[in-house]
Length: 209
Image (cartoon, rainbow, N blue to C red; front, side):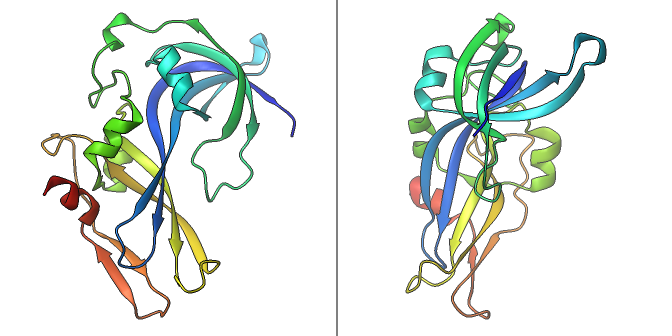
């Protein structure tokens, strides 16, 4: 796979977490790393264009660099092959460099407007609430806790190959965030079309017991 060069400023850093659902079971998680959102510049200097680009990096890479909003970075990566299973555009990142640091004001605990995305263990300990997609789109782009999560649904646990994928928005932030709106509970289909399980944030509720 040919490598694709990128260069841009960070506009958000989010955890890269994948969900696995199986009807009425508590969802399980794969904590893969982080997704860095870039305002990416491409083309020649005389005809430069800007696009939003999402790159996937491992937890050690974020731990080392402590990426923040405003950082100017460059590197290269491969295009994601299966877009149903991955929110990022590029992965298998190499030759990654931080060319310029963003504002020192971004070196703080994560909040709705930015800060440093915390270790994955903190996400695991917090658990998540469902998050209204419109709210995520309009108010959560800079927040490390508002995530777009690829979700694998096993339709028949006796036949795990029968599955489908979708994207879900979830919030790992504090319950009292003034921007938070839940949206409707996620519905999970079972092996029969009439078998529908309604997940009313059971995963987060169990962690808070």
